[in-house]
Image (cartoon, rainbow over all chains, first blue to last red; front, top):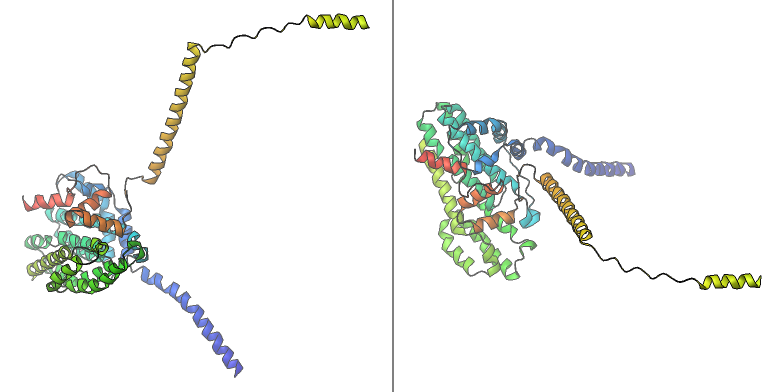
Amino acid sequence: MNAIRSIATIMLFSGLLTVPVLGQTAPPDQLGENAALRYWSAFAQMQDSAMMSGKIPGLDDPSVKELFDKNKAALDTMYRGTMLPNCDWGIEYQLGASTPVEYVRKALILGNMNALYVMYLEKHGDTEGAVRALTAGLRFSRDVANGGTLFATEVAAGLLMDHLPMIPNIVHSGISPVQRMALQRTVAQLGEGGLDWQGAVKRELGLYRGTDHGLSAQGVAALSQIAPLYVSAMSDASVLPRLQSMIASAPVDLRNLMPNPERVLAREQSLENHLAEARGVLQ
Amino acid sequence: MHAEDESFEGYLKQFRPRAPEALRAMTGVRKTRRALALVAWAATILLMTALVATNWSGKRSPSNLTLHPLTIGAANELLERAPSVKAAMDELMLDSQEKTVPKNQSAFRALSEENANP
């Protein structure tokens, strides 16, 4: 009996010891499937991205061709990343307002560069390349918002709205059924709203509870009432007036932190409109 | 022996200390030399400081990228301050580069406008 007990204890302890080991060994397989890692590689490969923040002469200018030649590797890496099903940016929310989100800035630059590249390819008659860059750009833009706060979602929405209006141009210039299907599938995968605005609002408002925001007890109490209403406003605009009046009567420290719900809703609506238009063109 | 002592004593009494020379007044030439030396030292120190500062900043930002690491707090502040989300995005892109181009002039935006109005 004692022997059985000892064996059972040994097995239990070995099991307990192996669990963390398994926990450490399992993720590497999945980590390789994380699109965010590819995107970081792409950011590292970007060259002369300063050009993206200036006025460039035109799509036929040799400097534009040079920019894309230099950044072909970065764009290709990004395209490969968009083929992966999972994108985890590993955001350290425990750092509160100091949480680094440099990836958002880099994603904005790379995403803008890609949108420009779609235009360039289309203008130079490379429809196949333009469709490939466009579908990848749409998936990349969606991934930028993954697990992020409102800021990352706003940037992702901006990138989507930079890419989506190019669909009608490409469709009208003549695309093959396969290319049309690729675009249809990508737009369909974005869903009705394109991005998870409710999740972004939850994460955003969750941050304000942190000590670094220094909210008063009254502010925290008001936040716990406002947060659910803010989240539901993302799917039901009719609650906006009530939400706005609650924010207006909230303690000043909370009021100063609160993102303007009207602006957020307008952005969400604008993205929905862009998506609806793209779907209409592709039907 | 006694006489010798007395004569030696007499000899010692003849000793008269010489009057000390007057302190040398600083001449114009010395003043100039000292001033030049001071200027040379100051210039050397300034040069060294400039060299150290240049090297240090060069090591920190070799490609002038990432002037300010972006945090959620800074991003929200930017969104709050900017007149529109688009303006915030433009500023965000400009902030990662040398600030030599006017604001609200991202390449993508400029070309979008160009394409919209051919």
